[in-house]
Image (cartoon, rainbow, N blue to C red; front, side):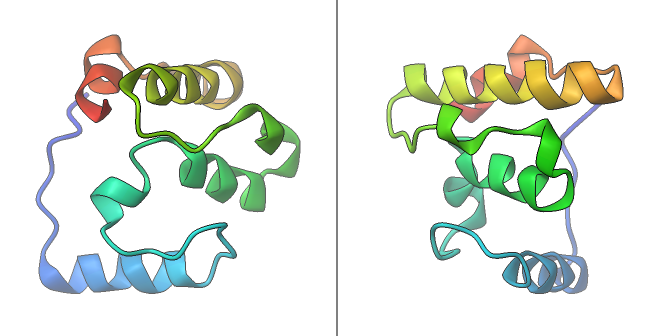
Length: 96
């Protein structure tokens, strides 16, 4: 599975509009940075699937170590457990 995709302007605007409808703890400024620590992804998952995520387990992070912890939690609690998939360590490392 490859995560390297290009989004055209319309698709990107649609994505922003969808995200703006979800109550998040921080305002969206630069999407690639805003979601890098996994916290807002956890909030997005919590919005649609409340039983999948305990938000108190996720800490806002600038450090690579905490980002890896957050993404590891998402991988364990959501992706692996609920979807029978995993996010590879390579993809997690690229976020940090």
